[in-house]
Image (cartoon, rainbow, N blue to C red; front, side, top):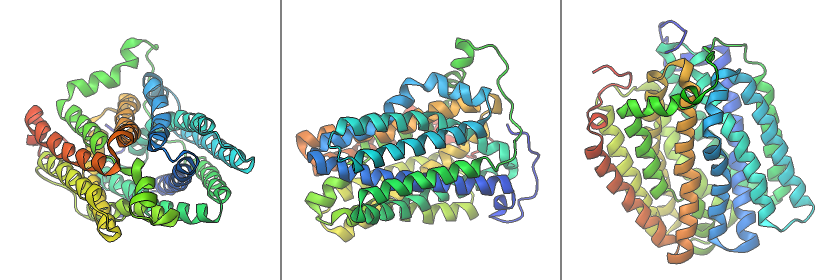
Length: 413
């Protein structure tokens, strides 16, 4: 599990009393804030250049493919080397790529293929960053505080997804250079903060590299059917129900709200999610975790379908906030379960697999949405995806009875 002994929680926000965790939380918030600013700018710039929703799908695919291709490497690296140093180096690489977007824009570039190439580089750095980041968390907080730290960690992500897209829309409205420059500066700031985290305890992998060690994450997930069910549920639910790639289409062609409106639309899921994240920081899910997971995945799908059908901005924002709130419950249950059930020596590899599943559900889901929207339109794509997510929740309740019957996140019945 983790090397820390249990200790009194001392309040719902006690994790912030641990300086390494506080630095980690701030660095992660700055990282996600930068990424949100950048993705709003990229989405608007790509759609401005081509007016083709298919290219919005390639934005997601460019970021996902590196994580998929490197899944056997990224987790093993996180288990063999310092997770803290990996994070810092990846942040420096991501800041360099943000500077690349700045240079591309200031030079008057108009090739989306250059942007896709830069995104692939960003996705490569993020492929190493993700497993190291997730696996480091249990090394810097006591076991007794881990579930609350995960909720607070999610709130950092959600807070950034609220403010980041709005800031991205505003900055892009001023100039794309302002958006990319701000993202670069925030990523460098986050890298500097990571270097301030003291060296934590970490059970590094000492076995000689081989297929058994490389595939350990897959083997663990396959053996733990509840973990497999939870991760695959998120994969297929968001793969079908994800609508964020098409938000530029909604902002420009359906709701007619402009780049600032696009920022508001991208922020809306975060508004619902952070409210739930703050609630979860003070109210742990103590029973029937599996049922709650399945129910809220279905709710996520229903709100997605509502958003897809809406042509009224206020209704669209409410629907996006609702799907964000429902998704937060799913994220909380899945991440808590993975972190508490996984031994530290394989945590990097398990999280690498998890990050690929998350990437598949998000970036690959964006590609699916872009391709389908090019043929049947954005509204039909989003509505059908939301309905598909509801069906997936029902199917998983039958395919994974152990998940449906799961009571406690820590594995106790």
